[in-house]
Length: 191
Image 1 (cartoon, helix red, strand yellow):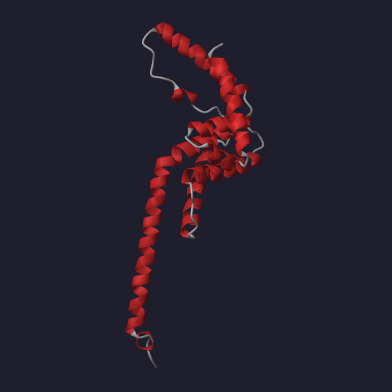
Image 2: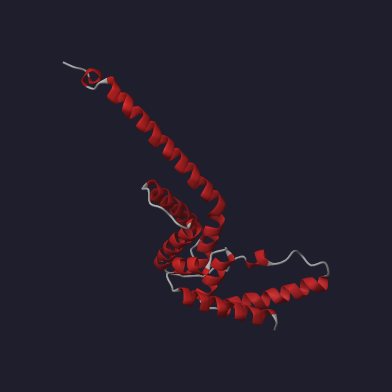
């Protein structure tokens, strides 16, 4: 009776070993790349999910699911043309699914204070800045959810085309939502 080593010539076994090493090396590089992207973008993705109204605990889970899906997509060899837009689009769709399963939908206001300038030097300037921020927050509350989402995604650096892809709407609709939103916020600032 022949053993496996005798049945398969050594050269065939030696050819399989480099292939296995190559696959392991590819998986390792892919894992490192997804980890790097995760570190760079997870805060923005999770913040967007919170903005969509996904509860905090679930937003963390959905964020992890987004990066798991990224890994799986890349592992299958599928190309992603615009990674940032792809991540937000997946997060948007996952967030909408989670939110639709929730019985109570509650929009969580994003931290718009991150757009404020550094603290003013005088108490009068601080008071004026707080009053202006109150008007802006009130105006944000008066915008439609689509306008808020467009503004939020734009504040994250996405282009109009990318926002249209994420939200599943036309480019002209994104343009109109942003125009109306910015106009309303500008009016609030100058009230």
